[in-house]
Length: 222
Image 1 (cartoon, helix red, strand yellow):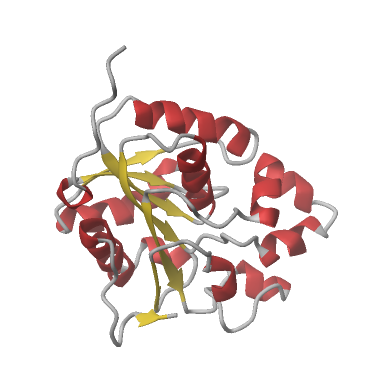
Image 2: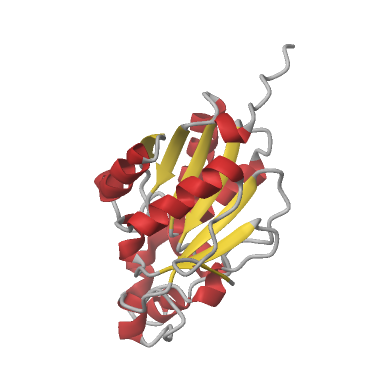
């Protein structure tokens, strides 16, 4: 049986597969696609049913998609980052260079818990509720993972009283920190605004190129 082709140097990969978050469709990431093209990448959006399907269907489908190649990087917004990490955990031999999580509640979501406490919350979280509530385990895989968090506290979580000022309005900064990731930065964007932010796209592109963020006034190491 032939062995799989080795993953090329991550620095040379220009293809990027993007994953959206809960309640979003593929078009939601169109602004980020445009920004990444300006950075010289070849992005495409991979869609999934975040409520009725959830991670139980999305993760194996993503594994199959990635296994078919070609080598690519990954960027996941919110829940999309959790799904990407779980796919890499289940199939560590996938031809993936690097992963950037945008505003992903890697340690579980206080906003999801606040929604779950309401009568209608379980229904709108659907089959993604469990993953959003618990987050993911510390990262021990070979793929380099970076996290871009938002530092502008405007969003659903603030309205529900689930997160404070140290957040993007939906996900607390503490919820984006996970043991084992290579790098972490904060940009001036809300949770929704992360897919619109030129700075978030620039930082993501920087990490995909070299495995580190640019730390300065616009992005602070945390």
